[in-house]
Length: 61
Image 1 (cartoon, one colour):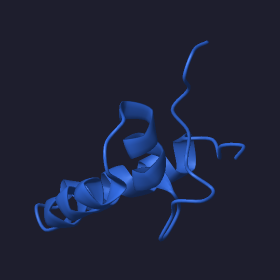
Image 2: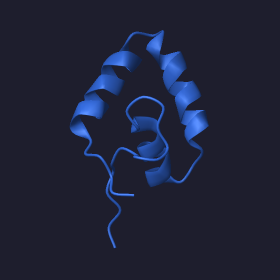
Image 3: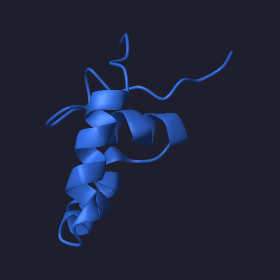
């Protein structure tokens, strides 16, 4: 069965992007949240998060 990249309904703080990506690739979502928070200070992180929140469909959990 093919795994699809989706936002998480259960593991979310804002839009479920980090929870969905972490579940898809099989690692802890909190690590991804820390990495993403650091990338926001570089300027591209916020734009990428908003894009992912708009593009990725919400998962069925």
